[in-house]
Length: 288
Image (cartoon, rainbow, N blue to C red):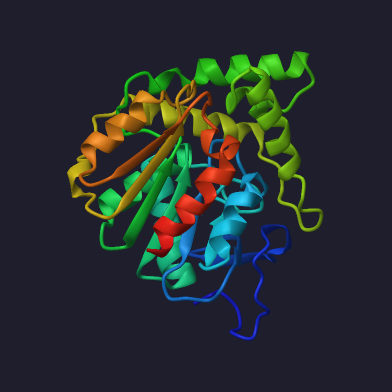
């Protein structure tokens, strides 16, 4: 495995996780890992326009207390090489190479959010033997109703953030009521806790390609999610404007035995607004 020496000190704070790279078939993947060493790690799949610095440390740290956590940049994102692929299926293939041929794992658990959950679904549908447990947050199934409207919502909220001099995530992830505004600002501040070895920012060209890939995913024929028999935890807010909340219920219906949590008065980032409730639930699910 390309995960370093077993003599590495135990790190359970995402703000302190070392920045690493590995190369597979000429492609360089940037990643971070923390938590106790184990044979089955939790691989985190991140959202649209996100780099390694966009994971909420409150959720990562809660899981890393007892599990090996690995976050990574898809190709064309952050400090990884190459360019963003045209489809999420290709992104899933890249992730498979990174996990199996790069890191050397043949079994993983998955934690995913938004676009990351779409890529994770493509990965587990194609390679069901690889994934043991699956966490899908703020996401929906291939061909999900109204998922292709994400472009309009995204650009509108970016515009609103510019005129108010705010971070776009405050609009995209959170309701614009008092509770949502407070949660959004707190979330954005948490993302600044890492002060060294921060990732490279997302490039506009890569962001545009990711948006187009999500639209293709939303307009594609549905995947056969009956092949997902792994324990699956689904979570979202009740007012997700990016990936409509009804799609979390759709996933729940289509993945037998799955569990769904819908947090009240919250949007796309419901699991970040309610991190105090969600983080221990996710950690327990992945530890059980």
